[in-house]
Each structure stands twice: as structure tokens, then as C-alpha cells.
Image (tube, rainbow, N blue to C red; front, side, top):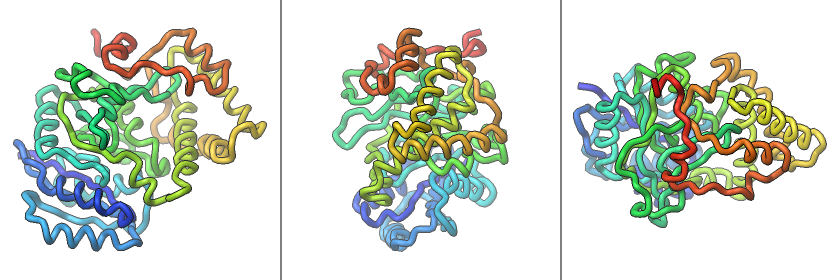
Length: 360
């Protein structure tokens, strides 16, 4: 029987312990399906006593599942810590499938069982379900990249009943807060690791989904309610008042690394868009976090290129808006923050492009 290992990631979470404890309790009692299940607590070198709180909670809870703890010597971000957990899951626990899960996500007990059923039945290598916000609205039902590498979150802000989400559909990538992947696929990637450790955070779930499509493998949203995600709560608890600045830095750094290694249909306009942004950075027209992120992103891009080469967006499922939209974005600074697309899947579906190999 196949073994699924859930990698539940923790780092210095004592300030948000109420949510983390609820997340941990929900994970410990996930339903098993036609698979063996192990919960692996991956701690990225916490120094705030949160790992002790986790051990105490595990001892107090009557859990349905096997539990292991991996304490890493230092924090290497989402990418590095999950890589460490993945290696342990495969080499020590015999994982055939892995779940990547944040500690601020409270899961529904049947979610993993149902995700696994969809993945096996349809032959996907990676899946995600419906992620809800604490207010009960949809956070996303799958993520898409557009031709300029900007993320489009399907159905964000809608009520569940307002979206027709009864069937699976292909996406650019599953979100890293709760996603299930096949080990056989991940072992085809550089160093047999799911992520590039040097990216630290922010270039992980998108990288993994894009690499699946590059290798002619499929990732999808499936109609399963995963649970409630207290998004960015962990980040805010770790960085405090600096969280917004750190988020800006990592966001633009990792987007730059992707941009410098991404090929797309509107490449001429894309180059114009990048060149304008880079010029603004050199002329100090952007704040220090964005400027530093762009310049550090160039260095990171070299590492990504050396490991995986150029990522062809046309090989992946993605969304493609009108050429005039991309022309406007290329010429007018900040226009992407003012032009909002309807994220309802009925609208997005009109803009979704599938690779030729998937259609033929």
C-alpha cells in the first residue's frame, strides 16, 4: 500500500500558537484512505520554544496517525526546510506521495483522502483543493500565471455557492499552503528535490507546478474543500512590523528570478515591461526593498538557470489576456495594480490557454 507523508512546516510559531495548535490537531486526525499515513513535523530550527509546545500537544492528543519529528539545524525558509523534510520523508519514511502543508492551515479531516483519490484516478502528479479564508470566503481554487508571470487566484473573494467548482480543471500550479504531489515526479527534478533551496521563500509552489508542465505532467484543482488558511499569519508572526517589507523583497526577488528564466508568447512586450521596471530600480524610483529584491533576483536567476534552464510558459496551462492589456502594462508603471480582472472561474476559463500536447 502506498505511503503518504504530510510535511507540516513549523518555525518560531509561539506567537500564533492558538492557530498552530488547531492546525496541528486537525492534521493529526486526518482520515486515511487507501494509503498509509505519516505526519512529519518539520521544524526549521525554532528558537522560541514552539517545538516544545508541539511535542506537548502531540502527547496530549489521541491521534489516528503515525507522527515523526524532524528538527533541522537552521531556518532555510519554506524551500530549504521543505527540501529537508522531503529528503527525510523519502529516505527514512518510505514516502510515495507527499503533502506540503503550512502550520497556519486548519484542514478538514476528509480532505487528504479525497485529494489522493482524485490524484490517483486522474493521473495527476500534483493537486490542490478549495482553500478558504477565515471569513469563509474563497482564498483560491487554484493558481494561474499570466504572460507576464503575474499570479491570478481563481475565485478569490467569492462565496463557495457563487462558483461552480464541482469539476476538476488544470491550473498552472497548486498553492504551497496545502498541496499533494507524487514522489516519482519530484524525483525527476534537479537533485531529486521539490524546490531550489536558494530561493528561500516565494519561488516554490509556482516552480514545482511549472516544472511539472515542462515535463509533460499535469497538475490540477480538484473539487475538495481543504480547510481554512490563515494566510501570511506565520510570516507576520516571525517578522512582525517588518513583514510587509520582507514580503515585498522576497516577492520581487523571486519574480525577477522567474522573469529572467521565463519564455512566453508576448516576449517582446514582456522584455519592455521588465526593462522599464529594472530602469526604475536603477534610477532609485522604487523603494529600497523592491530595488534590493530586483538586484538580488538577478543573482538568483543565474542559480535557477543553471539548475533548470529556461521555463517555457507555453508548455504550461496559463491565462492569456488581450495584447492591449500587456502593452498597457509594459508602458505604464503600476497599471497592473489598478486593472483588476474578475477572478471567477467562469471568466478566467475564457482566458485559460492549454499547451498543444494537452489538446492533441
